[in-house]
Image: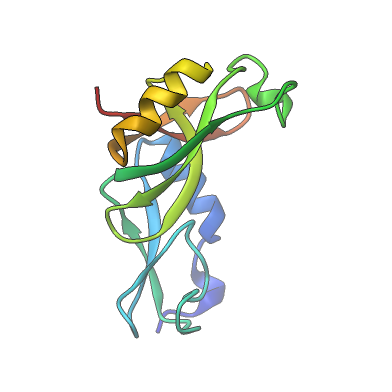
Length: 139
């Protein structure tokens, strides 16, 4: 096992990856499961034998809603109103993220709900301070 002191911080590596267009999680050498966001130890079995793993960026949108005004953080004010949702990554973890490709109106959210779970793909939103993970639903 690599000395933990020699590893870059998992969150720092995650944001640097996002800035480069790479979507990272952690893969456990002990149980084989994936954690997201990346962690220093496995969230499933507690092993410290984890390594960064590039994820596919493919997901299934399970649930979507709209934000409340004002936005939860100033970095999101320009996006508001927006849709956010729970998505199951192809690799297993469920994440919360901004959802692109649907308007934050009751009618559009109802149409999305009526479609049921839909495929989505990760995108990076370039903000002034940090890159932000978002997912675009399939048309």
